[in-house]
Amino acid sequence: MYSTDSSVLSIKSEAFSIRIIRMVQYLNSNGDHTLEPLYKQVLRSGTSIAANIGESQFAQSRADFITKLHIALKETNETKSGLSCWRKAIALRTSKLQA
Image (tube, helix red, strand yellow):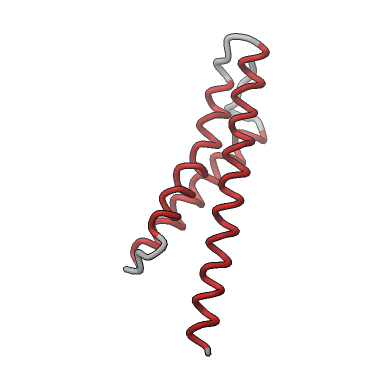
């Protein structure tokens, strides 16, 4: 349907995926694995965004194109929710350490 090689959406989603991967690698290297299930979920949903945008390039119809981008949007929301929970969990843990 369209070329994702130079689209802003493709470039930004790929950069976001790389940031998610690096963040999870960093957090896993710290040895604290209490939030590992959340790390894995954010990794899956965060990298799925770029994958679905890339797949939309090969959509078989306009409806298929829209569906693939809608899935990317849902993955974006899931990643946002995961990161929000993550941030709150880390803040809670930090406040307990300070108490």
